[in-house]
Amino acid sequence: MRKKKVLSGIRPTGKLHIGHWAGVLSNWVELQEKYDCFFMVADWHALMSEYKNSGRIKSNIIDNVADWISWGIDPDKSVVFVQSDVSEHIELFMFLSVLTPLGWLSRCPTFKEQLKQLKDKDINTYAFLGYPALQASDILIYKANYVPVGEDQLPHLEITREIARRFHSIYKRSVFVEPQPLLTKAPKLLGIDNRKMSKSYNNFISLDEDDSSIETKIVSMFTDPLRLRKKDAGHPDTCNVFSYYKTFAPDLAGDVRTWCVNAGKGCRECKEVLAKKLIGIISDKRRRKKELLRDEDFLPSVLRDGARKARSFASRTLAEAKEAVYAVRDL
Ligand code: TRP
Image (cartoon, rainbow, N blue to C red; front, side, top):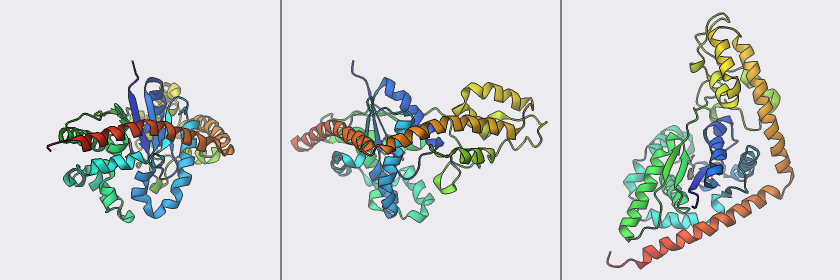
């Protein structure tokens, strides 16, 4: 039996950090064993919010893909490509746009939320309103069965399914597959200051962070606010440091819980152990990333190859969609 298909994407808006690993990439690495996976750099989606900082997008693409591969995405198993290398996405987006009611887009919770949050970015634009329609095209064009996403993306998945249904009902032909979300089960990693991990707060640890800076950042992390003195019992389940352990050192989590609730080791020591562990993990990936980037042809050739494979699927679906649109009679 053919494997089911998975498609997912990340916008190349900056460096990737350990929150991306915990929430997205670690999941991708597992999925590629079981599914035919398409992993996409969503550079057009990035442009929708970053059109005034567009100069950084190209270098982010290479940097991010280098992280993907050094952290375990295997371009021999999965199709790794850049959205804008497959212009079929935009063409299908056009066919989807003509039948997408404005209300679906303007009522989309992510749209309303982003307009409020990204006030400095001027995203009250025609393209940004259509963000979910382009995402629908990304997904439908590969007939993806599953889309691994975080909760925040569920409204986009729902719009994707609705667009597919509307297309099928208008043109009386079934071209697309209605995708299902694969919710990431990993807990969200907060930033080192307990706020959402984000570029704008500068509270993240990047996937290629230097050893000394990992140490400084981890040691400065907020811990359990109820544990004021070393002899106080801690509450690992509400401590952000413990959630880092669960993600990056699950083998130590049992011991850490015991130290913490029995007031065995202090928070400082606990963070030093974590820093050492994280340095071990990141330095290895950082070295691999450096090697990948040293060979100037390697990543461009991975992306060229990925675009070629992606295109061969995408162009077939686009042709079917066009045929459905223009073959229809008696609308
Ligand atoms: N909107 C997604 C995000 O911000 C990125 C994205 C673009 C995507 N196209 C996609 C994710 C298709 C899944 C499938 O994270």
